Length: 465
Image 1 (cartoon, rainbow, N blue to C red):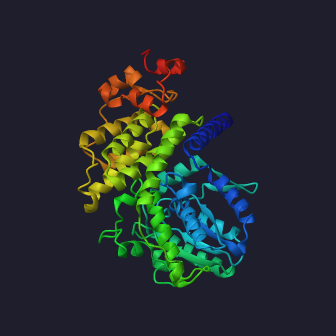
Image 2 (cartoon, rainbow, N blue to C red; image 1 turned 45 degrees about the horizontal axis):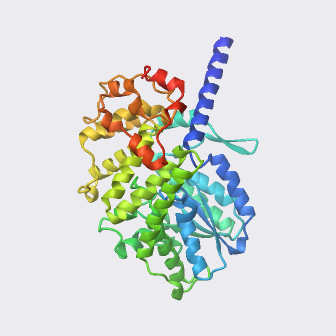
């Protein structure tokens, strides 16, 4: 019995270790523990009397922007403060995927009377059971096995317990804000979909009604959906222009309220001008140049280049840029084996199907395309900790099929173009043209793919092709 327990424990430790390594490899933002320690350092290095702290999730961090450090809401808000001659500096304490519990932890680190702009509640519906983050010797450790177990047990949907948890979170937030005498402002989610905290702040003097501001300014349709021109390719986060509009709207709200040293004469035009569009094209050009010339891992750069390409297309409708975006996605999938471009496209498709607002979108996929993407997800699902197979079986029942059987491709070592893998083509039934990327590879990297650097195990996995 003791041997069985030891074997089980060792097995769990090995699985946990594997999940930790996978999460570190796939998460470009670092772990929550690293973020928490970084937040401490940033707060200690700030002058509390001249700092505005932005606290929240990926929509504060800058998820969807081509470069979070330059184009997030806090970063572009800082630019506006500088132009107005304000002495205030901005600290971005947002982190992707965080919930109210984690935002409270950040607020507790802040000095008394700190000025805080906060967006919270978006992730609380699907991530409310986050006790998989445990303090060990004063440091946060995320236990991935425990996280998976909680997701499987509790599911992703909001229920009565979650509503109660939100009410409890609000009580704790208000108590903490009063105790620390925080100058706290709650900024609405720009898409106009209520976060689970809106009902507690809406109408209050410290509520920044961002969605309404953008709607009234003509950047949203009557249903409250912001124009796609200002969205990232996942249609959940803003792009660079979307964050620019948010920064302008929040800045103007403070100026109208004559807070943080701003006055009505500081109000800026809520608009996207030709200079902004030129910045987008210049930014895309820089990312493409970086992809071609950098010594960084190219696989890590692709999401950012794709974001830059998508927003130029979304704003201009330039078909050449859309073709470039599609080519980037193909290389990212079929050479670096990332399934994220596919899941983003499918998420976009799901939004289009369920919303009249996106019904006429020309980038919708056919059932055949959806199923093709699903088959790639099945083959490469080991590249993600999320169970996209189950999710898309539910979302696209009757479209996606499970009739094909695939070999184990977990040992494939990217970059490796799947058009070279005969077994992959045979098992998926894909024509070679569908996965062909070598021409695009040469375009993006300025040189042909080097077959001499392919790991021998790739040829073994592909059946000696």
